[in-house]
Picture 1 (cartoon, rainbow, N blue to C red):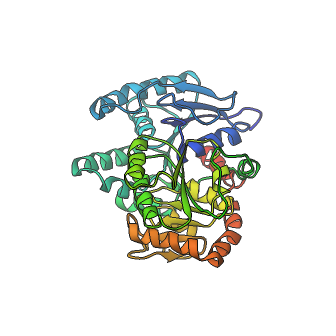
Picture 2 (spheres, rainbow, N blue to C red; picture 1 turned 60 degrees about the horizontal axis):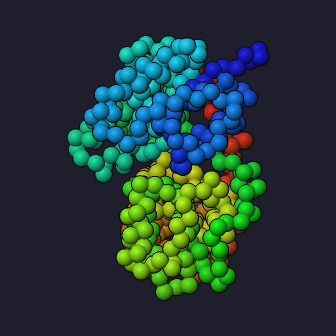
Length: 390
């Protein structure tokens, strides 16, 4: 690079807990030697470390706001980002999540930004939009198509997501798949940290890590766990978010206060995962869930809903990626898949994992090797090529 680093803007809503946010935090640390990285945050919420050499543009916009006001402000916000890029001579702008993607598109359309624009899709759009009104779906589909037509490159984090964008949104921009990276070194060096919660002997611990958002469907997980309430087991939930009070209220209403543990958000969830017996993901929709890979990296057997993007590619990669399990659970090569939003099937899978030590050991023996394929030292080269190969 002749001693001159390419200038790169990475734009995301926040660095609050979440899969996309963790990916960005990893990229900041592992690409900073090759790029002059600038970080744009829509809202100044930071829970991950930012290397001191990273320059930060805080837009200081409220994350939760009236939808009409938020939409009307997008051109002005895109102007601020455009001016920052122009002032700092940044010619590569990479957006994670839909709001920064819309702003990147407006920067290209309204203000004629001359640099390259890369959009990073992190969720299965068709599935995500199904839970909303028809008007919202029409608007959202229009915005996705509008935005991605103005991108030079779209990065998806699963092949199911790539197919969705090409087939259902008619995206003509090149769509490349790069899986989410995890930091194996960080995980291995932090699993021994002592957690605040004491793991009891002779108690089987299920664990979940994730933000408390509707699509993560923690309500399903708690309902499924309720079916197992008479077994000597506990459920450890690591995370936080807008649904926290609702989840705690359900736990109270079901009389599970002594069986369900809320740890709150923790930068090191691995100390909880590594001491648990089985990781459970209950989401309605995902992109490519980091938490599953991280659980495998901790050597844990996993259960996941077979939602539209990610879990099947990770846990049953040799199967038809368009197939979805219905009515009962499916035992994959690296974990168990259950139907989306099916309490009975999820509870049955959890009971199977509880009862079958041979199956747990089989999954555990394969877990770490599978996780190695997603280590950041392996994956970062693909981001490097994507950011410099335009």
